[in-house]
Image 1: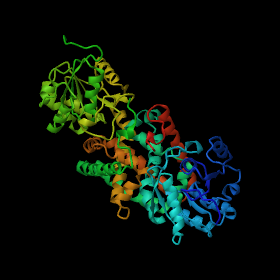
Image 2: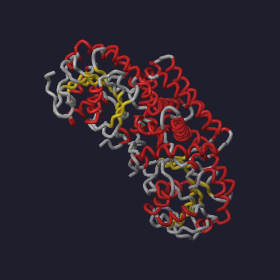
Image 3: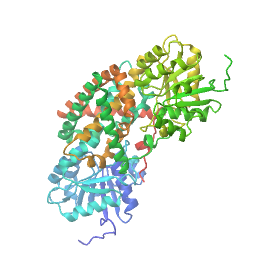
Image 4: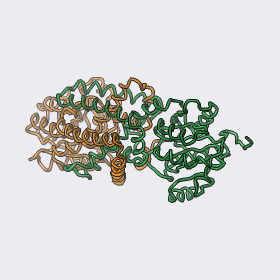
Length: 309
Length: 309
């Protein structure tokens, strides 16, 4: 193939489909770290396309997906996981034969299946950059979002190893560290480290809002005792998370079952005054935090480094 | 009474009993914001007393509680709530008649009862500064911990209003905003805004540690997807939290029951693919976060302002 391949990425033309927090961060990351590549962008919402143009996220931002993906060497799908199948089907007729397709979905088995069905002739290397904030939309993105975060690749069996290597290199250039994992295993790991935490945070914020004798204003006023940390997570994008729970249903329900059993055991310990059981668990959980900080996966400063001045 | 009252606090000699995160922060706060007052300190653990001396937390740090509280105009009890009764009983014979006693316990009905029983002749103004970090011990304290945080006073009925006003002024000088509340109501508000979030965080970190097919190292590696926020809360002091759950058992169990019902409803929505129910809740919870940020109870910066560079 006689296309120009800039040094570094090996992709001359990169299309980002879906310009929310992650998509806009990918586009900005490419512009900063792969300055030789051309970024085209597309979002199904006209308002998002307009905002993305105002923010100059991409070199080119046509009104039709067809034009965004035509001639692309790499397509990065950054839509909610429930929208992956439709987006892949819509682009299929317009994709160059050599184009590699990757995505950023938070669950992988269902996405691998959808992409393989829609794009049987293309190299597909699904990815999940484990990074984000509670904010959404094209203005929320920033080029350094993936720095020092993990990006998990889940290529289906039989994927060309060269395509996997190129996608790994792409994410590394955006600052991520790359791991390869089977889609099913990914979905179980993320069910516990990401999906269940979000489900629980959404639930407790809902529970607090519904109390009749504690007012909403009291919940907000005294949120510094722990609750506010949960509200940050429960402020994440509703569409994205609805899709994650529906798409990763089995693993989420299994982890939820285990969590509920453990919660019942703690409930019983409280009811019967078994202080030793509580103390033992609370001591064990401290060690996990220590490891996360030691391995650079969180800020070591107390209270996430929040200002107290 | 002919004692010297420095301008500002109205307390010439302040005793801080218990020198963990909160006690050491009170001592440092007094030294910075009430420089005319003398701070004496005490901790039941000899190692903590030694550390506190090395850190120069107090003007005077005797080896006997008796000496720390003698001549104090104000005693601030900063021990775990399960140790309040014993500490109050131990100091009772040595307390000056005019001394006012306050505390920093995270639940109040049981503390009000314990202090009133042990110190029937003294003015008692229980307090709960809603502030803290996940760290513990005398080296974790800092003078600005209470800045712009709420401090809830729960004086028992019949408490001298002048004593309440003096304690309110004391916490305001440490930077807090003060509210007065009935002890039972406090315990229900904090059960949802602080105690239940901690219980849930401890539980999920425990659940994640026990999974057989997801390794501990995977849980830590991919914790940036939400889990790491929970580990911060689950790193809080085990003794303190054991005591809180046992002392505020009724309110915690009630809130936990409501939470479990709501979680079951979400579980059912996921199992039956009811995306609209999920979406509606996830949209509602966003608004709560917005209010918390608007009211200055959390950092507005995405991801708590964590660095991404």
